[in-house]
Length: 56
Ligand SMILES: [Zn+2]
Image (tube, rainbow, N blue to C red; front, side, top):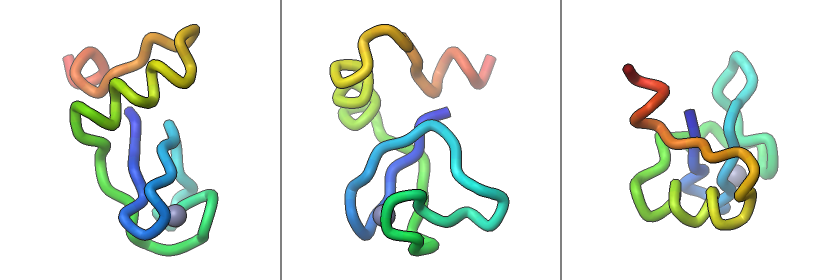
């Protein structure tokens, strides 16, 4: 799953058990939306990750 931080817009795949953003440490983490997933995959083309496949 790809997550986004509301506070700093950081995109990442996992967060720690407390749900904190690994970049800014705030609790403003939510699931990434479609645009953010595209952006993430553009940034890391090797991973080919998206939230939809992971939900199956
Ligand atoms: Zn953040």
